[in-house]
Image 1 (cartoon, rainbow over the protein chains, first blue to last red):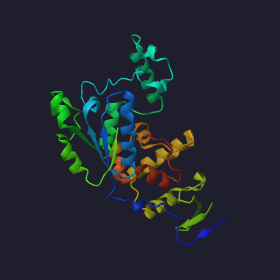
Image 2: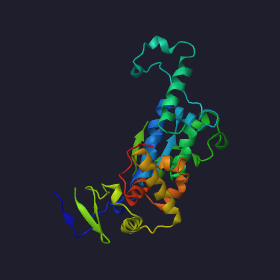
Image 3: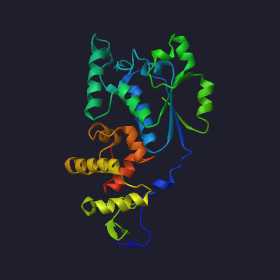
Image 4: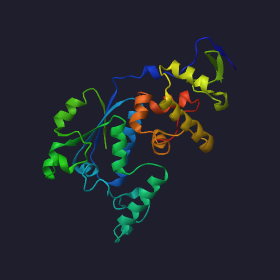
Length: 169
Length: 104
C-alpha cells in the first residue's frame, strides 16, 4: 500500500550511538587470520564506532615492517581447504596457497595488509602494539608500522578500551 | 513502498528512508536530502556524489568507501570529514542510491 507521510522519512543517521567502542585483539600472523580483524575494524569505523586494534603475539607480524607485507597462508592444519593434509607439506605449497589467496582477495578489491591498515587509520582507527610481544621479539617502535600509536601494556589497552565490545582473533 | 515528501519533492523510499528509484533523484533534491541529515553541500561533496551517481550507473551497485577512495580519487580521510560518522551510508542517501552491499 502506498502511504504518504507528513513528516519526511529520513534514515536515522543522527541516532548514532557515539559511546559505542570496539576493541579487536589480533593475535594471529597468518594471512587468512589477519583479515577478519581488519574487515571488522573497517566496517565498525564506517558505522561511526570508535575502534582500537591491539596486536599481540603472532599478530605482531601484521604490524612488523619486515613481515606485514608478507603474511602467509598454509593448508597445513587447516581442514577447511578440504585437501589431503599431506599435500600441504610439499615444498612450495604454502607459497602457492598464499599466492592464490592474495589473488582472490585482490580480485574483490580488498587491499593488502599494509594498505588496509592505512585505510583503517585514515578512517580514524587506532593501532596499538603489545609491550610483552615487543619485548619477546626485541622490537622497538621504529620496527613497527609508522601508524602504530604506541607499544603499550595489556593493562593500558584494557584501560583505553573501557566499556568497549571486544573481539579476540 | 512508502513515499515521502521533502521540500516539495515526493520520492519513493524504503522503510529506512533510502530512495528506491535512482531516476527520481535530482541535484536540488540532493541539497534537500543533505539538509535533512545536517550536511550543507560544497564542491567537494558534489565530487563524491558525482562519482557515486556515475559509478552506480555503470556498475549497477553503490560503491563502497574503498572504491570511492581508490576509483573516485577521494581520500578516505576526506570522506569521513565530508560525511561524518557514517560516510558510505550518508553519501548513498544524498546520492539517492541504495546502501552499499560490499564489506570493504
